[in-house]
Amino acid sequence: MPDRQITVRGAAPADAAALRDLAAMTRRRSPRGRVLFAEHDRVAVAAISLTTGAIVADPHRASGDAVRSLRTRRWELLRQSGGSGRARGALHRLATLPA
Image 1 (tube, rainbow, N blue to C red):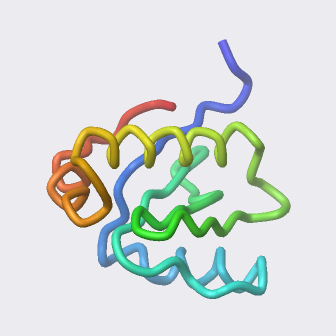
Image 2 (tube, rainbow, N blue to C red; image 1 turned 30 degrees about the horizontal axis):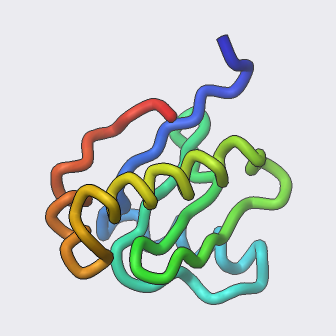
């Protein structure tokens, strides 16, 4: 069993501050559009834009596993939905899943 349980979930409007914080830590812009979060102990450690694939991650807490999990989940959602435009429905149906 891994030491760090990573959870991947769709971002909600209430996650705007966490997304801004991740972006500020990396000195990058916040990912736009639909976003997935990777969390450890219910704390966001990384996020990815479904549309562009842009990633922001907490340099002190994020692991390679969190980023890999986000990239894999994005790819799965885009593949299921036929592209980023149709990923909206897939993201809407996304339940909180362990990575």
